[in-house]
Image (cartoon, helix red, strand yellow):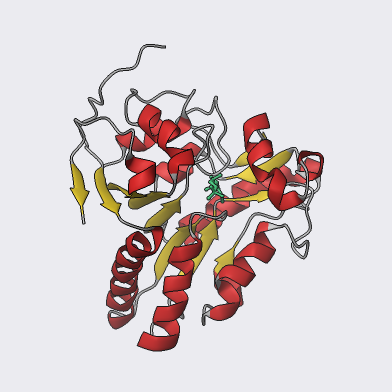
Length: 267
Ligand code: F6R
């Protein structure tokens, strides 16, 4: 497929920082401000959350703000993007377990206010489970800010290529490259689940604001391709270019192959 310059009406806001920690601190500060602003109006704030290595510095900074700056998450609702299929919430490699360790057990978000797809849903109930998950997001007022990482296949959530712009929450087969990248965590590719339940691209695009984070040279190639292409199901992250409020947080290593025509903001 020929590469083309981005002609989307909305240019993403790209911030390049010297480290993941520095980039995450900036994003965490704006999240804290939004949460406090809503709390002062007696309103809730809804976060869409990701797992994996990318958001860890962001979660560490949010925990620090909770402990040291009195940031409360009592008015926060959250919905995670995905969960491995066939995995119990208590499994040490489940995204439930990850999120409890990385964030939820360290802050004051009420248990009934965070949500993750259930990887143990019986196969014949997956459609109903996914629909109920989408309805719960709607009932919470929709996602205010969706946090995203990006996979080397170009996936967002676990929307592997090809995923359509109108794809909904569903069971998906993981790409071999995604399984390979997860192999060290699982102690071998043979232990990585084959499937996951993921929010669809359409659900992600409904968020009022989207923040994509990526660190390290290993993400530079897929980022360069993402920002050089018109939106295509073959690289699902390209659909983010259609979103009017899309920000990108990178370190220098991840940003090194970006096309020069993008407006970058070095810190
Ligand atoms: C995780 C998720 C994935 C990851 C992506 C990058 O909930 O939805 O899209 O964000 O696979 O993973 P890391 O951050 O481990 O490089």
